[in-house]
Structure formats: C-alpha cells, structure tokens
Amino acid sequence: MTQRRALVVRGGWEGHRPVEATELFIPFLERSGYAVRVEGSTEVYTDAAELADTDLIVQCMTMSQITAEQVAGLAAAVVAGTGFTGWHGGIVDSFRASSDYLHLVGGQFATHPGVQPCDRSGGEADNFLPHSVTITDLGREHPITAGIENFDLVTEQYWVLHDDLIDVLATTTHPTREWHPWHRPVTSPAIWTRHWGAGRIVVTTPGHSLDVLEHPSVRTVIERGMVWATRTASAS
Image (cartoon, rainbow, N blue to C red):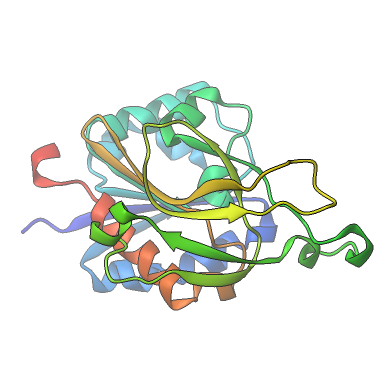
C-alpha cells in the first residue's frame, strides 16, 4: 500500500501557538502511517505537483494573507481529492480578505463573545466563557463524532457565519446576556464537514489553546477528522 502523505501548513498569529499546536498531532499522523511534510508558508499551495501527491492538508494559519494563486491552488487540490482540515482560528479565521477561501471552507469566525464588561481585565480570559458543545443527530452517526457525548469547555466560543452546504456534527449556542446586543440565543456550528469536488473538509472550532486541544473529546474529533478527510481511493 502506498504511504499516505500529509502536509502541515502552519504560521500566522502566534497567539494560537501554531508550531506547538500542530506538534501535538504530528505523532498521531506518523503513527497512523502518514509521511508528514511541514511548511511555514502558504506558498506551497501553488505547487500543483506537490499537492497532487498530498492526501491530507492540516492547516493552522490564523489571520495572515493568501494570494489568489495560492487559494486557487488549494481549492483545486481539494476538488481533486486532497483532504483539508484544521481547528479554531487556524482554519476559520484564516485569510479574512479572501472570499474564495471563505467559499471553500463554508464558514468564517465572526466573534467570540466576552464576559461581563465590569469583569474584564484586558487579557485573553476576557473571552473565555463556559459553554457546551452539543453533538447533532447527524454527528451521533458520523464516524468523526460517533460515541462522543456532549461536552463542556471554558474557552473562546466561536460565533461563526456559514452557508448551508456544511454538514454540522456539533453546535454551540450563544445565550442572551444583558450586555450583548442580540435578543435571542444564536446557535453556531462547532464541528462540520464539507464535500468539495472529490475532496473532504473538516472544521473543528474549539482549539484556542493547547489545553483545549488536549481535551479528550476535542483531540479525538481532530484526529478522527484527519483520517476521515484524507483522500479516498475513489479520489485517487
């Protein structure tokens, strides 16, 4: 059997610890039989031959910029069957100026609501809220999330703008609070998949910090998502 090839693309805003975060998962990929290549730039997305030989792209690149040529190369690879996955800002708060990237992924970080203003100190914990991740009916049957129960986190709770071409495996609901301007609870997708051409995309929105990535349910979802997104035989 030909060895599967994974490409880890990392960088961008250092607050999400792109090197340390991806290093948590590279041993899993290697144990699972992947040859892993690591790149610190999206320039690799213009290398059509390299991406054609890549079965899975794991991206951890918060904010940053991407050229039209690079996003076109990434999208073409996914359409041809290369899997694409990532977590938190490394995939849904990437390349804010690129509508083509947003179209590929199907959802975009909008905000993470904060604690009551009088309790804020100016640090990242101002945006850490206790919240639940709720597995959907589809998620209870899907190989990525099957057997995982609803779980609670205290971290950033992503509010995501999205289209309806995503298959939502888990959600999280933002309640109404007196200091917020919305008037009814808002439910955002927390984990989703997307079929794009012959390729598969998996997005996991929890993952702001290493401790969240090491949460057993979050880590299991990310690892299963890597395997599920990987190029299938029919896409080869």
